[in-house]
Length: 415
Image 1 (cartoon, rainbow, N blue to C red):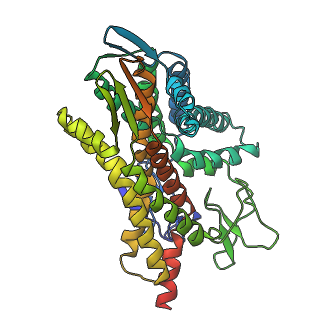
Image 2 (spheres, helix red, strand yellow):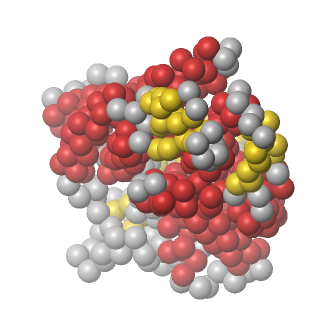
C-alpha cells in the first residue's frame, strides 16, 4: 500500500481537511493508495476508494443478521437448579422496570435502533448508487446523518460487554449462546468489515452536485459533513449536496465543549465511587463499583478482561476529559507546540471514546440473566447512570469541539 500526501500535482478536485481546515487538491490515484492531509496527516481518501458493490453486499448481509439477533434468544443461563433465557431487549426492559429507563434507552438506541437504521439506510444509499439513481436529493441528507450516528452504533462495544458478562456469569452458572447471540456475533463482524470497505469520498463523489465549484482564489466555505467546497455567498446557508448548515467554524465550539467538560468532571467522581451494580443472593447484599468489578475479574484469573474493563471504564473517560481540556487551554494560549500531535490525539479519542460504554452493556446482560429471585438477583445502581452520563457527555464534547480552532490559534500566534 502506497501513501501519498495531498498536493497540487494534478488539479482534479479540492478538499478541505476537517481537522486542520487546509484546502488542498486530491489527485486521481490508482486503487489501494491512501491520500493524507499534508498538514495534519488525516486520511482524506482511503485505499477502498471506488468500491460500492462490496460494502453494499456486506451491509445487506449485516442487516439481515441483525433481525434475528434482536428477535431470537441471545443467551441462556442455568444456575442453582433454575434456567433463564434472555433477549437483547430483556436487559432494556429490566433497566426500565428497576427505575433506570435512561440506561435502557441508551442500550436500545446504541445496540438495536441505530445499527438497524444505519444498515438499512446504507443499503438504500449504496443501492441507489449501484443502480445509477443518484438524482434523489434525500440521498445526500441521509448519508450525512449516517456519518453523525456512526459513532453511536456500538455493536462491537456491546459484544465485548456481553463477553465480559458471560465470563462473570460462568463463575456462578452455566451459560449458553443462543441463536440471537450467534447472529449478533456474525452481524457485528460483518458490519465492522462493511465500515472498513466503505469510502466516504466515493459515495460523495457519486452524489456530486455540479456547478458549485469556485476558483482557488475566490472566497469559499467547506462543508464539514461532505467536504464539498462551496463559493462563499451571503445567500448560501446550506450545503447543496448534503443539506448541512454551513459555518466557517462550529458555532460556540469552545463554550459548549468547556461546559460539557465541567459536567463530565463532576459526574466522573460519583461514577467511580458509587456502586454501579448490586448482587443480592443467599449470602447477603453485595455492592460493586467499577474498580471492584475489575478486582473480581482479577480474582477469577481473567487478567485480559480486567485490563480491558479498567482501560475502557477508568482510563478512557479521564483521558478524554484531560485531552480536551489540554486542547482548550492550548487554544486559549494560542500555542503551536505539539500541534500535529494534538490533532492526532483528538482523532484517537474521537474513535475510541465509545468503548467506555462496555460497563453499561455488561450491566444490561447481567440484569437480564441473573434474575433468580431470592437465590440470586443483580440490580443496576445509580453509579451506572452517572457513568453512562460521563460517556455520553464526553462523546458529545468530542463532537462539539472543532479541531481546526487549534490551527487557527497557532496561525494567529505566528502572525
